Length: 201
Image (cartoon, rainbow, N blue to C red; front, side, top):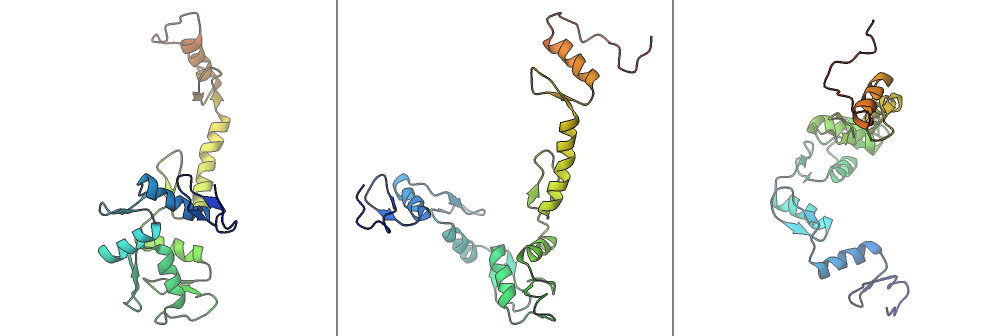
């Protein structure tokens, strides 16, 4: 691959002589060869090679998701953009410049950290972007998911795993019954009632 300029041609296209300094730019260039448009509008069939184009399309063609109630002039689909608007909008009340560095577009809630305001915005939209990997539980807070998933993880750690397959059991008796019925060469008929761990003779 020819590199007329080592800085500008840090990454060179495999199919032509185009070179770029940033990998993201080369990746976007690849799409011109493959015809891929990986970014899609969630409301129509429009797609693009660039994430920014999707954002622009949403704001121009569809009703914006977030609209500032204070200035009534700013709207966007991007939660990050509405948060940064909450830092500069002159119509928002800021009793304390430190605590109200970012103000909610919907109400007078203020926060110093972006993460705190984002979490507050979810109370307006009803979003719960963090999801448990093991069940349907979801939350507005990443910490809640981590705390919740510990219950699943602790349960898995305390279970009895089968040595021959991926099944796990809450008691050693259930594991023994499984191994006897499924993996034993004795051909035990497990459809018949068997003694339980609590059975007495």
